[in-house]
Image (tube, rainbow, N blue to C red; front, side, top):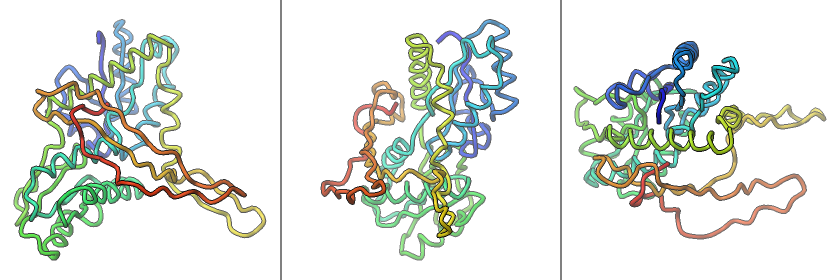
Length: 310
């Protein structure tokens, strides 16, 4: 792509600070808001095309929606030639990458899936991610640690040790997860992605966004505005005759999402932007509808294959 690539970071990357050393110097790293507006305006003033990439790993849909709202503040000339890419990754990609890391850890070790704490729903997603890593892996003990939250790193290690693990391996489920130096009985199982693999995924997101814009004029902003629509509480007003639900909760499509990507951690494999993933439709019953049919079948394969996520 000819133009400026802007990577927007949230709590998973400490406001983009943790992306230093992961992304090349040609990629501008910002925390969103005024920083994002300033960079876009600077590029557009110089006639550069712009592609903005939300650098979430799937646990921060609000970053995607907030980025879209920020771009809406630009004037027409600034928005022309500016595109918003799909998020860097989804939780399906994250599970696949963590499972790849786990295959390199001896089976007698405990896995401690670790990320900075976000809001309660992002934190709950991390527990779900850890469960999927355990469900389809060979490690008996898989726990969660929230940096700046509860359970913290020390508590996570204590739980693993109490369950009989001789050593605990920290698996980073975010960009901003430092090596646990000085923590007894603990090793580091990261990084999540090598710099070359991250660059490949980023390039794929940028290419897709540019192609979409050139084909249809879709800058990606309208779609991204709804990214956090299902992120939060679904609450009821009780039996007062005005009972209704607000769609602020997590979607109830318990999608068996299949990540078929290979993380290409050394950058020598196929294009890391080439996978696809499928999600089964929601089975949440509508009012008056028959109860959902429960499908019996094999557990979904979340192991990355020979292609990389896109």
